[in-house]
Length: 280
Length: 165
Image 1 (cartoon, chains in turn cyan, yellow):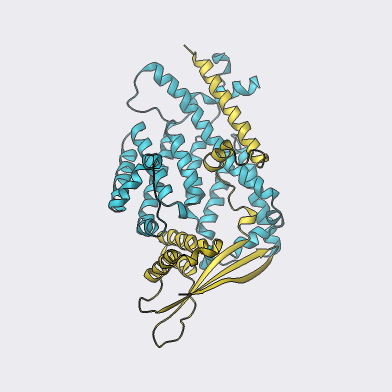
Image 2: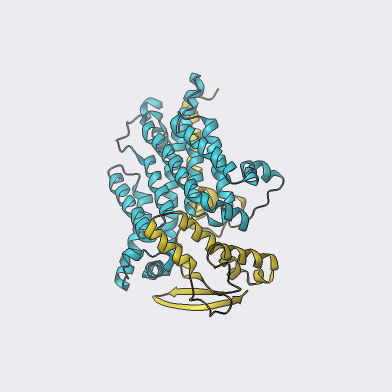
């Protein structure tokens, strides 16, 4: 237990982090949100009209920005886009990042009937990225020092969450008879609203079995092996292939994109400097 | 004042506790089910599992037909499939979001059979499909709700409900 704590403390060290990739991840999330807002805006009016939400009491405060849609959906969209642009152009500010998270949670609430796993992962990452960088307006040494420790911890927490998302999916598939037999792949292969008409490839039983097990092994393997720095590049490349395949074959672009953005949290791939002795 | 190393130690212990709780929730999901902790972890901290085996067995479709004055019923149209094909040819992701809204609306009817007895809901449903897929001149609409079940490499398609407006 003590050794595990020491290893974690070593891992938490701020100097090991590469701010460039953390910033890249945050900006990637903001760009993803801009992309999403642009394409969801055309149906936002319909979502509000046909699946309306009623905010009462505390929910009115928690989801305050949703109230702007009463004047028209653009009263919600335009401030959100402006916040995102400010977040991209300027250095990390806790207020701006928090406002973006707030608007993003509100967008998910507003579009609840049409959200998928990508929105949950997006909001989780937006929350974690709040603390992964030291706000530009923070100057006091003792506070900066404490925030650096928190930033390191949140970075590893974000990595753990990504690993858990894969592990949970892989473990659930491993317990599923449909996935173990390949029948689940056959089922996905026959989802007509997820079929790419340019790439219709009817899988036979053996192909379904092999693909099903590849998915199970990849998801569990990613979660367990991503911590070994030598294997990390291979897993990240395999992950990109996996998600790009989902985008190309099934058209689930948002889920694929958000998971690929998560990979920036695992960069750079470099050896950790041993610091346990100096710390203790 | 707490020292830097102690602060890091506290954070490290916190992470370890979080990992243990997450593992417990993944390996023994029924143990903490319906608790606040389970809800927080499964909804916000560890979203998923994705493409779960039992959730991809059944898929639901809606086919629409309509009739204009003095004419026959139109050919059946599957708006979701049509949108998806259009997405593939135009690469416009809005069509995928549109599909999700379509599926949500008709799945509400499939999962809650009494929903169409509710006049207000019926009107909303009719208004939505009329404003997007059905010619304004049509005076009758037929909605056929289908279920595709793929189980152990066997595929079957069943008609669940048919409604005429």
